[in-house]
Length: 321
Image (cartoon, rainbow, N blue to C red):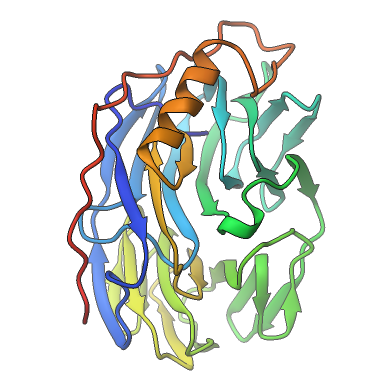
């Protein structure tokens, strides 16, 4: 799943201007975006008040949707550069195809990790015969300048490490948590973890004080550092924390996202991350002229045309706290 917004705006992200160097509790509300005919997503990043969390630059939460009599997810072939896509499911299946020839079905609690490097294209769809419910998150990780020309590749990991505590099971999606390390390839210090909390659980999760963090609520009722978070919302937590108090009023699912603040300023538009407006403009041209990004075979439909690119990227003023 990717950004299908036909009026995509240019966003300048990264740098330390928006990083909060101390613990905070900043609740982010989503923007609702229609994705195809039957899927609506709640977009948490980029957000009006929060562009990135570490290298995490894009977060969509979707479902749970009843797609028993619907086609479900149908995302035509489209391009990416300068980032990694992370597909994470709680319910349903997603069939991934890409221009490298990859063909994989990603299922709940399995990691689908696509590294675009300089250029890749892919499609995502619910299989023709699919489960009744679709529920998950789609996330992007920005690649630092030293690695953004890396060769594109796709990884599918079905066996991920799990950290446990009374009432808590934490699957390490990317990076490391409490000594457990994901097999997924990363290019900057970060962490992504899926947290399953049992009703009544109270626990404290160890954190790295050099990271900034956020928690995405997937399901159930839970408090994060005393703040109730409802499904589809995200709580930004800032930096400087060594632990995170969690409490569940019901069985609950959360996602922990964190990483070292991303030093570089990036330009993000549609499904591209670059360093200048001119670079984004060239990537759009390459996609429209069918060069550089390769071809996805096997998808029953046309590839996605790029929207119009605004004529100039305006650089927002950063905040320092």
